[in-house]
Image (cartoon, rainbow, N blue to C red; front, side):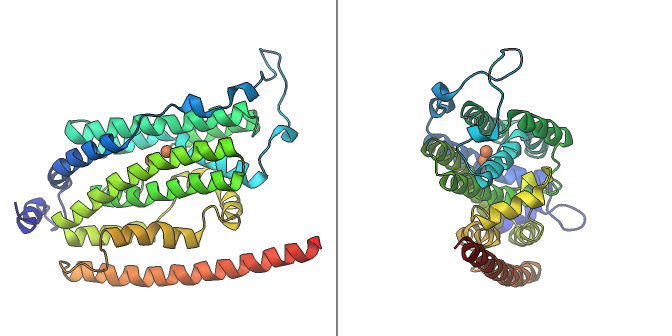
Length: 326
Ligand SMILES: [Fe+2]
Ligand SMILES: [Fe+2]
């Protein structure tokens, strides 16, 4: 089937928009192909082998061990903050599973992907928690209370109404998560932590590739709808952990440390995905897609200005800190 014929078939809604079930059907063979590619690329790994169990000891409570105190942590406050934020984000997996299982379905290649992806994501929270508790890197009581609060809130994706928006969102979000884990590990400056987070980041990268390939295929099916979806998602992008308590304060700390900030978001998350799907080079867009492209170009310009302003403020702050320390 030619892309044009496919696009016509998929556009069956009264408002001329993309029929969701139609798009998912069109993408099913692409999902099947990318599932095979993913399974061939993803090497089995064992989270328990990345946790330094012999560093651990019992805690106070029923086992009458040693209570946690801040001096036991080998990590600085920023690394702890980032690890907790990333872990709480991973913890909300049941909500993410619900969202994609409802949207993508649990049958055929889509269903196989939904369950496989969930199984891979499941090891991230487990591994990070095991590491944090074994090494006494964070307050275990505070961590557990934060998990209860965060998971009790749950997560509802603002993009789940439209499949193509969801696919665009997860393409960016998996890459953002990959970078966030990787940079947290580097910032932590602790080899065991860094190795574990690099391993997790590698999983996130394979997830990103899967979704990015689907996004590319969605452009072949319905270029205008896909172009508008990418604009919507880039405009309203929020990390899935944004509902974690005190997120704003945490994210400033993480931004200042260069783990994740506006510059990284624009240059290392948005731009690489846009380049890969040839967003600005396509010649198959109608007026609606062209309009979206212009708006996204302006948005990226605005992000660049905002990122520069942030960098200037950060550099001035760091210079003041350095002067004070002398
Ligand atoms: Fe993950
Ligand atoms: Fe992932």
